[in-house]
Length: 252
Image (cartoon, rainbow, N blue to C red; front, side):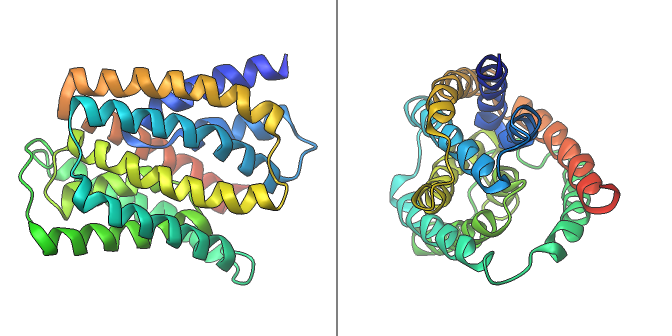
């Protein structure tokens, strides 16, 4: 019964995560509920062992149907991977409690800004080109890589927001680009947790198959319905993240 619940949760998480991120908002609480006796680090590692494959599958879908700026994104992806390793190491020596309380506030500001700017992300008008775009994308990849390794919640949504607000992408192209970088931040965290034995592979491999299916379906739905649909899902997911992170920070 446990594997059935985790498989269905992983399928839905892959679907949501492929559009705007936030899959961990669905899958991590289910893992904690279904496997209450397992160490938190192991549950997080098991989540990464599934989500990395779903995110990779969504990236492939976006590449063939939307197109990715590989010359710009590949260096940023490498820095995202490196940043996630730094963040994962930093969490072992620096307490992250301050981020737990700060995160809901940041997400509220992000949501209000998105709601106020109704045209933001509806048109794909990149602000930077050449080396300037490479530098900006690399900065996003490294900074959020460190964040994902150190703390993590909302990483995919932060990627999407920064690609829209700073780089001038529409929500669809931002979601496509975010997937590639998020693959690398997940991979970095999975590598570290896997080497330390914090992955339940017998669950993770089955969940990975479901997550891939969800990721492929979600990417195709996003591509079919366009930037406006992705913006709506983004608003919904960020709202859910606000509720979840505020509860974790102030009520639990």
